[in-house]
Image 1: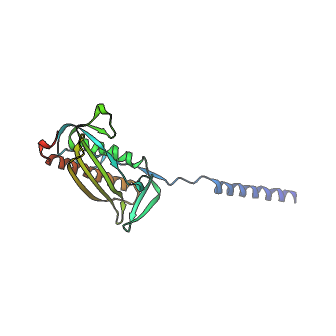
Image 2: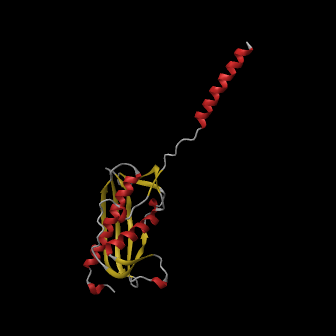
Length: 209
């Protein structure tokens, strides 16, 4: 009898040990991170500039809606409904990512010698300033991303814009994951930089400093 009880106790302990391992083993973290990519990193993206300038270009301020400044990737459905992802995250604050990528994209698209970021020191004050205000920058219905932005090109010393326009872009995504959305948004940023460069090249030469 003692041997039987000892065997049963051993078996019960083994079962409890296995159960404990199952209950308390760490679950894999489903969180996935993505970043925006500059035009140099995009597959099959055009890298030739549509303009060329020796001027120093100031980028900013870049304004982003508050609801986009969370690390959770946002989807906007039914026009006004926001759905933050439970697993997809930006690998950096979105406003910093936009600044980083647009600085590269605009430098390539404008053929600029130098881009300085807002706010800049007085000793590096640019000749011309590009200001951008985003009103949308997120995933939407039907497997696409939507980008809406107003932007202007002006002398850094003046509030009167030389060029002021609105850009409305949509790009299809290749998947439902955050990386696919980030890639589509990156292509949209490259398109935005190209639009700014095209408007720059159409400006009267004597309008620029």
